[in-house]
Amino acid sequence: MAERMTWFSKFSDVVNEMPEDRRWWFAEKVMAYGMSGVEPCFEWPYSMAFAAIREDIDNSNARRENGSKGGRPKKAEAKTESGEPGQGSGRETEENLKNLAKPEKPETENETPYHSIPIHTNPIQSIEAGAKRKRFAPPSAREVDAYMRERGTPIDAERFCDFYASKGWRVGSAPMKDWRAAARGWASRDANGKGASGHATVPVNAAKYA
Image (cartoon, rainbow, N blue to C red; front, side):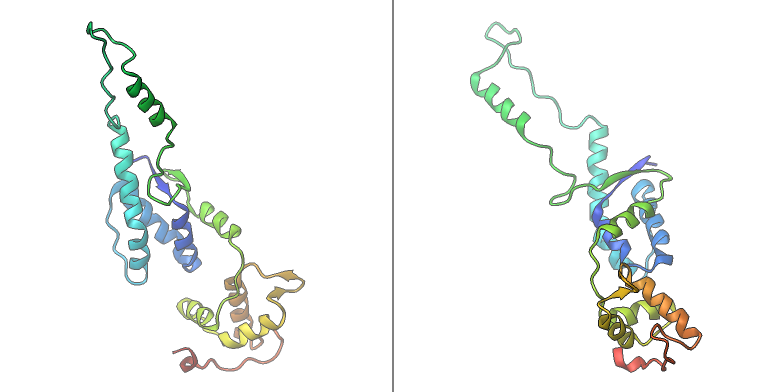
């Protein structure tokens, strides 16, 4: 069993799109695969999310395994005509300097490791930190509807979006940071018969988003 695995920033992006109550569950299975090779059994859409990051995990582990075995073999030392170790030809020396100047390749192309996560470390802290760096983007009514239906607390998503759009996507005097949290609060108020605007709510039309 490996003591650590590399957690890339794209993994956080994938997990951030999941419902909050499924993020740790998904991250645990990803870590189990990365450190122990335990094959996870996901259903859609989590199977698609895992497929998007699986190759990065496999490539990272393969590179780490190669590194633990000593990495690339050392080049044979140049010798003089007498058979003694020497400086080698000027061309060889120049080539060696060029190689030393080359930066190490990242573990996967076009992807810089986010950081390595030691075993037993909760990656949700890193996930949440990555979420805070992301700029807020107003959701569509379809996104809100899909998210709330998956939680089992559907709302009138179009009315939700219209209400906050009219306020410039602000909560009170502060800019909205998390529309999912706002939608959950809206659903809670709907359960009591009032929406964020203070008016009585109306039934959700499921066909509107079909």
